[in-house]
Amino acid sequence: MKHLHIRQAEAPDAPAIAELIADLLPFVTPAPDGAGAEQFIATMQAEALARCVGDERFHYQLGFIDDALVGAVAVRDKGHLYHLFVARAWHGQGVGRRLWQAARAAAVAAGNVNGFTVNSSLYAEPMYCRFGFVATGPRTEKDGVAYIPMRIV
Image (cartoon, rainbow, N blue to C red; front, side, top):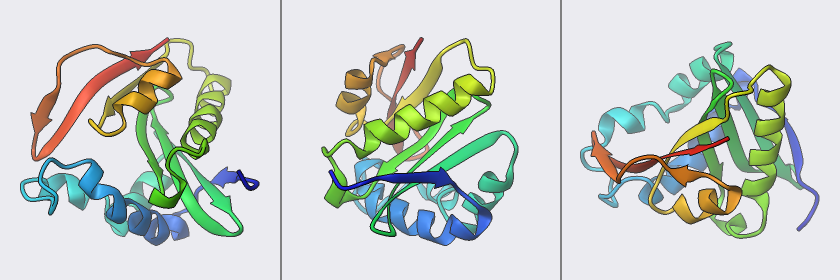
């Protein structure tokens, strides 16, 4: 893999994060067009993301290769993996793992001693299992989004 540069996100990065996520929504919503997930999709728009990036409860980091945004990761409240998105062209090449490692290290440095939770998309479940997460409940569908609650200590 080419060199992945990871840095903290800033509010002006929100439109680029939103664009990255928009391309990946078919991996998250059971309906390919996102039908039924409008409330969830609204949280992925630039304005909402800018609010999250500026919120002290969230820690967003971005991954760049050759100045191109290839991934984004966010941890909320030092223990919930809120976002982990990797551009399609970079799936399976270690970008997600590197972003997760950076997010985990930052949360631990900020005081997390209780482990992490994530609501994994069905598509991302194998990746999270490789990271060491285990399911803590059954597949759940809510507001047009299907996910599996998971945890790692």
